[in-house]
Amino acid sequence: MTLSDQTALHSPCRIHMLRLKPGEDLKVGLQQFARTSRMNAAIILTCAGSLKQYNLRFANQKEGKMCPASGYPELIVGRK
Image 1 (cartoon, one colour):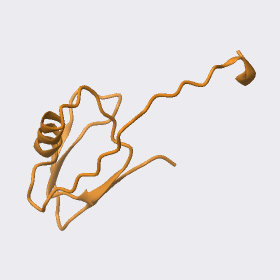
Image 2 (image 1 turned 90 degrees about the vertical axis):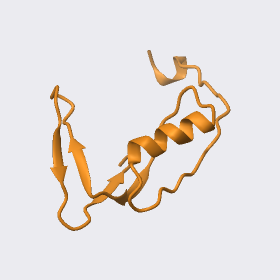
Image 3 (image 1 turned 180 degrees about the vertical axis):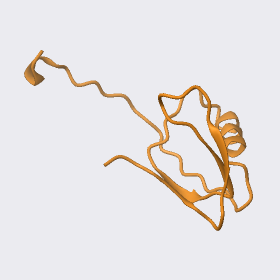
Image 4 (image 1 turned 45 degrees about the vertical axis):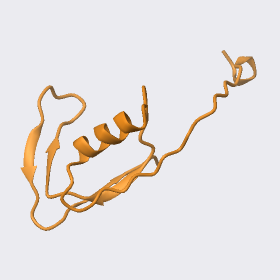
């Protein structure tokens, strides 16, 4: 299939911005925001922040590892 054979799909989307306060749990905050906003599906396009502890799991691993952070490691997620 070439690019000229493809049909572009368009769908309306809503963009939400959320700021969690220091000490708030990331997963709990996202779940609560999704629930109160009545979201059925969502995608995180980008984020930035710092964490006190985190669970690091690589894509090819079944289990992750809980890592306590020394200082305030930054979390920056985005697409190159």
